[in-house]
Length: 454
Ligand code: PFF
Image (cartoon, rainbow, N blue to C red; front, top):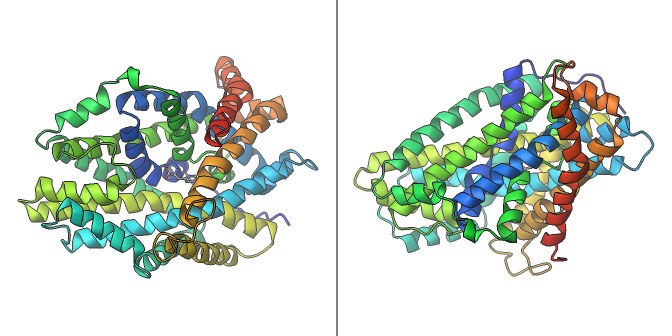
């Protein structure tokens, strides 16, 4: 059943900050640096920037267009714009993807809270690199601590969601996003002034194109999808709360550059700091949770109070970034249940929170006491990550670009995208061309490659 008591973002700034809040998250501060490290640095970053420009921004515009035009949750959006067709399954796939990502993303988000406490109680002091590895492994395999933080994190997300669109999502983003930027800039300043930081800067700024191969290219494209929250109706749902006068291409551009800036700034914290204490840039996913405490300890060990302040700041920043993303994931599913099953927003939110806690607990335990139970050779946590990020997001993105490029009426597309006819027709044509041809072909290529069919 359709409900008409939908919320709205109150201001243009709120629209941009909430959307950028969704995009900016663990993907930027945790995944981007380790992907950059694994793929050789500056050349990866340049290709990533190309992907954001060429595919990211057009698909962002497509999701915005679908959401604002339909003014509905992402599942209903397709039913409204393509009544009586199978397109509704794309919307439902998006909702399912959001629910599954939220369940395991919250596990990692919860870890950031543990690390705030560890950093704040000065427990990094005097530890060797091996001890940092033990600290992380012991925590992750502890049967209850990660579960508590998972529940705390999901309840924090829940609290914002039940406050509604304008008071909850918009207000929290208005406070959190600027705080995040300020924290990032302070930490960049500290990291680049460390002795020996120059090697890290060189790694970030001097591209070595001889290292570029198909895997670098595909890694950069996949990272652009995950980081921009594309392919699962997140920004489509947010756009359903946009006002008629919101300029969609401009908002998409703003979200893309803010997201990219945060990722690059995170690189400017992590690599100069890592090089400064002789840590390899390709340390992988452990870079933040194992290597950085070590970096803080070694770099600022002679000034313990500074080490505590900076490390607490870093993990607070990571938690804030993750929170604005979990809020957007939660909203996709809450809006769907609230509007499709005629239940109150509060009840819908409780269902989502409870469901995610249950699944999240299993994902978290699969890294510790349950690590011997595997499916297709993966723990439950890895399986969720694989299925959602590597299969469901690209499939969603593929259909979204086909829907926007081929199916949707040209008149509707122009009305939504042109910002009252002020957009240059050439930009519009380029956007549609990319959605029709370039984006679907590239996504199909990523997907086929990731499934090992190439
Ligand atoms: N973009 C978020 C990040 O970079 O952490 C993760 C994410 C949020 C992915 C929302 C997908 C999504 F719909």
